[in-house]
Length: 511
Image (cartoon, rainbow, N blue to C red):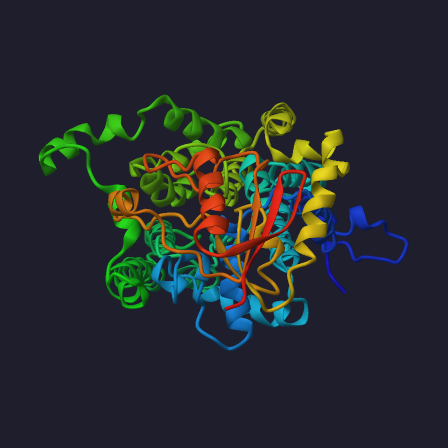
């Protein structure tokens, strides 16, 4: 039987009370975090599944990751034909932890498997934060933190954009941050260490976790020197730095087609010399204005209070490479890039509020967090659930499903970007028209695209975007896509099978 310290805070006394069958779930400390996680999982999965059913998911990136996970499920190397012939996806980014999803995919071979799994992983990140919040600010405050994290724009943007390996990092980092908040250094390292297997840049985040331990753990809670904790922190930092270095310089080039790290060029300095680059770095990290806006929005869910916590420094590696990148997609708030930052920001918030002695200040901070969450919510993807179009079907969707159903299982298909993930679970799929390989753009512009060899071609002329397209690279206008489609019929021997509502289905003539 647990004893209750009468000098403890109200939240601590409540946590010490035993659960009884008559206690509602929202007053059971052990169940509250999991209940919130289940609710968020359902919310994220609803958005993700509806997007897929509305043909809003894409080959770049849901289709690519499904091809990799499908290969793992079939005990093959993670080859993704969408990236190129025999392209091992470990040569693009280092994410072997994706293989943990293979058993689930083997049971349910569908892109929805990845979308639901991502929803669960993002929602799972709420569990340690809500648990921490009940200790730091009480049960009511914990509900505010749950809402703030679960509806935060960084998590919402990731949940509503295809699938990405970064979803695996969110709960790992969240549990690690909770352990850091409780000064459980070994537990924190155990949770953070697998980040090395999620993506190559997350070794830097692991190094930041180690640096925090080395700094905060140099003395114990009684002020005595703790050499073990400091050593653990330094070793963890070294392991993170070395791990990222080996993945970028050795492992990824070993798996890649060109023996290098394709994304390294995105961090190239814009100035002529190293000294010039260093001199301009502070301003370059904030220019253009999109970068400064993103930095503010990253901290906004915490009412900017995370700035007062050293835990927030763990976000610096991710923010640094994004702001230093030449890829404009990395600077903004869209896609999945900010998901891993949200646990850090809310951990910083809880660290600050846990040290606050004035209850009035705590209540004001939580009220501000809730207000910011409400204000930002309509501007980000979870608001799609309130849009009528999210719940409606159209003749175009019916046409797409009817034509895709005519393609047999096991076929090779070249498909428009938004049709790709409708086929990747049962066919071998590439993008039509094929996007020129980076570094060979001008060669392709001169010589034209490779001859199509897939058995089937399915093209959607009413997709909401021209694809392929990458910032600063060769855009592929819809007119040019149509020209490639015409060439397939007139030059390469494809026959028209059906055309309906802007969707064209071709089949290669038998030889």
